[in-house]
Length: 90
Image (cartoon, rainbow, N blue to C red; front, top):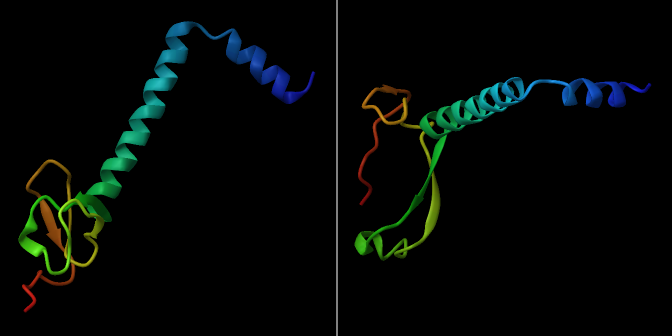
């Protein structure tokens, strides 16, 4: 038998509980990677109001880079400042 055929027969003989456990572990890692990327590298945002109308329109989509300011743990107030503090531009 070929290797792929052996693997398919071995996976089909696994009990349902093992298949579910493997699926849960795989989704756990996907969620963990998402949270790490979202908390440290960047976040997707939508402009909710017209406070920046001269530069951005209401409903614009953007990706906010967090690398230049801080890295944080999602859903907490824990942040590690990296390079500089954000400043208001004029």
